[in-house]
Image 1 (cartoon, one colour):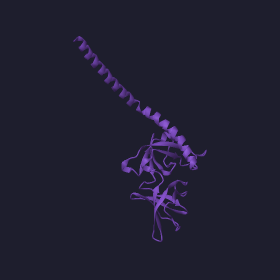
Image 2: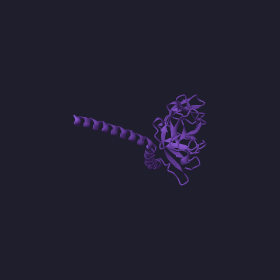
Image 3: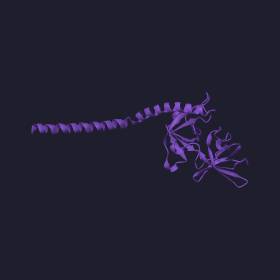
Image 4: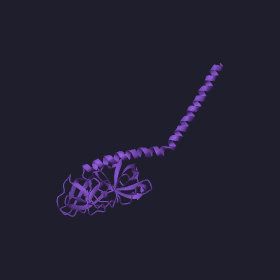
Amino acid sequence: MKKHQSFIILFFAFLFLAVGFDLFLSFAIKKDNNLTTKIILESDYENLKREYEGLLEKVNMENTVEEEYVVSKVILHDPYVFFDEITILKGKEENIEVGDIVYDEEGFIGTVSLVDKHHSTVKLVTNKDTQLSVRINNSYGILQRENDAVAVTSITSKEPIQKGDMVYTSSFSVIGLELPVGTVTEVESNGIEQKVKVQTAVDIPNLNYVLIRKKNSHV
């Protein structure tokens, strides 16, 4: 009987210690979560930086001595402003500034619109307020979002535009350089003016990492 009671006491003592240890471990992990996350993200950053350098070289967009860029993870894609903005894990501490250009190996994503200490907001090319000068072949127009589609209007040339033609940011835009924006998916013409719909080059819903280029750097 005494042996049985001793076993019960030892069992509950062990159970108490086990639960206590789990609670302590949970607290320790929670307390150290930021450090763990930072270590993982920094590792991701170095790996992704090397990957991006290779990708940029393939599309002839490698950095020059004058150019400064930062690779960042996308940390928030708010469903309420899904095609308007994203939040990235780089900010003032990494010298990110409003107006910096955001893109990836596929093309132009948007520009930095708000900067905090450790994160920034990016205004996407699909933002409802976008008014971006773009080039299609030898024609220029204004890219903007219309309802759920991206379109180019106010096209200056009567030169025919066809489905599949590439759309680039214009050197006349605030971007100041040409980056792929997407491809023409539909062309409307009334004989006087052309209007085209565009499929963005970047898969915005599935963005995980982006490249930020300083607005005053050179390509």
